[in-house]
Length: 367
Image 1 (cartoon, one colour):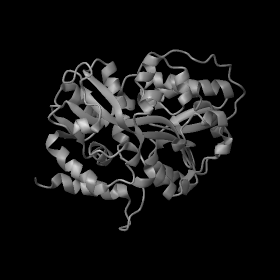
Image 2: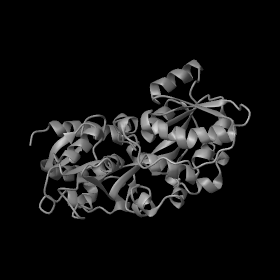
Image 3: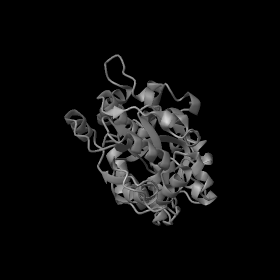
Image 4: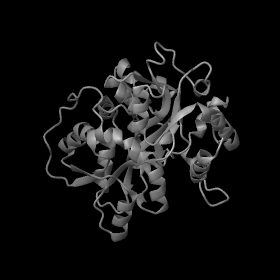
């Protein structure tokens, strides 16, 4: 996803509680003889704890390959490793904008999809088969609302509803600052553009919709933790933010819920650091962790969507209902078009860069 909300979004997984109850799911065999190790750079906290429980320890026991974690997976650190030839990380757990930036700097190895189990790969949507990143954990921007303000199914169910202040009373909150880009897709959806016609974005139509939204926004939030606090406390009634964060707050007892209709999906991905000397072990790992059963167990601990649809064979209907990539919820959302946001325009800047700059000018405009 091209909205650069990476660090803010990861705060949930660095500090939040686990989603659901941990339970053993693999009767792992005793570890084989030492087969070396791989080092994965991820985001720490409950995210890393969950991955250790359901991915890394079972993989170690099944293969004899040790998994160490480090991080966070910042591009500057990867650049220093590649340029020095001292490669200490093998795999990154990161998003597409970071991957695109590192590809431009020649810091990543392309993924050889011929080495990925074809049956497992077929369960992962093709949009997640990026040449340099294999999608595994899905986040989404959704309508998140206060259930005291909108009880018993009375919440807004579309972005047109969010833009409708007469039918849906109350304050709104949308992102600004923290590198989070303008949510222009929701503007054109609110204006009646069909979901399959969002891209290429009609920029002027989107900004005209943003002009109509502006008087309804009582608070522009700087990061997603702030967004969830605003909705939970009732300071705002409706928010555009990362839906899985809302689900964590809901599980902790906050009067908050998520409407998946019209949500924008984006992946976190496995990416291979250029120059890694552990390629064979990396592909063994990738084939292990994209398994549907493994992804289902991860989803029970952190409520981000599994990339593999096979995961839902191991999740109950109640568990699936809370995940953005369940078959029902997936059909109601769309994938952020990374190619469009990353397109370089006539001024030498990407669409993403141009719209973030325009957003800053729009926010300081009077009236």
